Image (tube, rainbow, N blue to C red; front, top):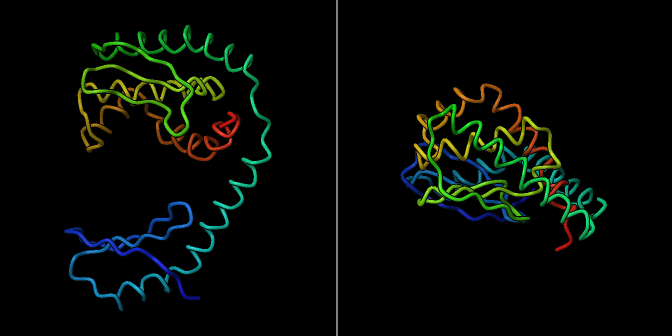
Length: 185
């Protein structure tokens, strides 16, 4: 099978594939030829097909998910306004972290974020996940107060305060699209 893809060359050392929506992206070292990129894509054809099928299945499942009513969203926001700041405060004390404002929103793509001004933002839909997932997102954002990146040092901090971070991050990656699909857009 022949694939159409976008080739992005940079100072990286290895070739990788990324599927973003319908787009296939090949990231490769500057020295990579078109022929080498084509061969890499062909070698990974079964992986590409498997990933595209996963995406199609996820989109189909998301289309079928029951949407939250306005009343349910308001109730979720009210619960989040109590629960999430409590978890932030609990972890911030443990970590010795100082933060600014906490903002809660119903977001399309993000579970949390941290601004340069040390303000924290969280998605109210986190209340539809297990408590451990909420804690993992809270820890992730609080760690950004010390490391505003995703470096090895950042993840050292995350794992220190949330040893099962990978487990809960995987849960969110596997189930998050279905949860976000519950909101009418």
